[in-house]
Length: 395
Image (cartoon, rainbow, N blue to C red; front, side, top):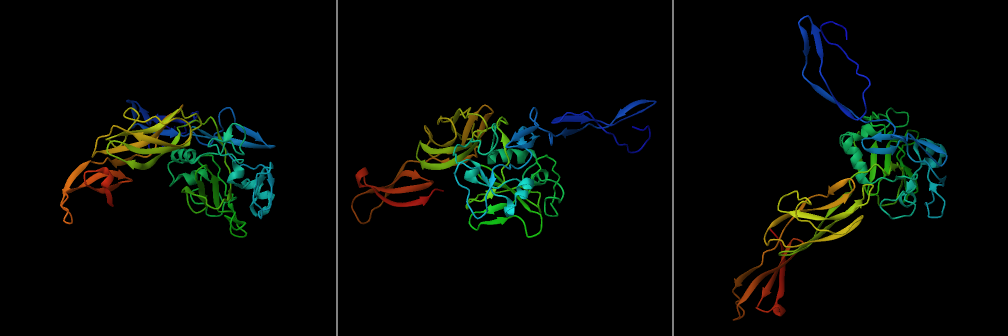
């Protein structure tokens, strides 16, 4: 830069995407060279095509790709199939069907088609199904969308980085839209199965919301926010589909289930592997310990493999002890964990009780716990003579 005092501006070129770089300003005079404090920046892997596959050709249309972190996405909403009128339902009839906003094919060309869930999945229930996406691609899971959102800085800012910038296709003001990620999200709106109507644009204006299918919830972007939202569909709407490449491998997505049976030394819980992460889940179960973040290096169950719900039985526990547990799943990407939950095992105690109405001495027996309730039994010395008194919440 120019050999003068004051502020100078430097251009750094030839950088590689996805790298962290360190820099220092310097100045040289007759006494030598002085340096500033060290600073660093990350040249994020945003907006570039996926390595080795910058374009996907599908049903006569070319879709550009975009690499965002470890994930490879189509850069446009999917637009395949035959348009049907919005007063109909999409059906399993060997014809790939789509809705176009306001029944205009031109809207499909701009914003992509709108698909009901079963049509998008091609009437298959497998969690890792390709659906209507090209071979080697699939309809993403919520976990995969969450991975994208977290990579972009979290749900309070990621929406702006995912939206196409400007107001050419979005309703003003399109808050925070920078398209920094290259995802190029467009407001395809939606179709309502309950009313046979279109949602997402007022009359005569650009659409104002984007709705993408994931396998668990719907992912939403709005014109007046740079947040990302999710919600659960109950009325089988038709939404946009954005495909993700299969070999964008990651960890499996697993959730922890609540305790269903709570005993003195044995507790039953479980989990649910909602998504495999792109590779086979070879082991799953629950890990448990007295610390708040148990891992599989400690006590854990082995409850099969694959996706779906499973039941776990934790044994050899200590009575009257607080434990923490969480579901886990292992695939080629590593070990993933669900949320950590807790429980307290029951204590077995006999307490003397004065029985005024009888000469017999009875005992109040803390016999069994279930769903965090303490079942109190009146015990007279014979299991056949016990009777349930009440169930009270465990302290």
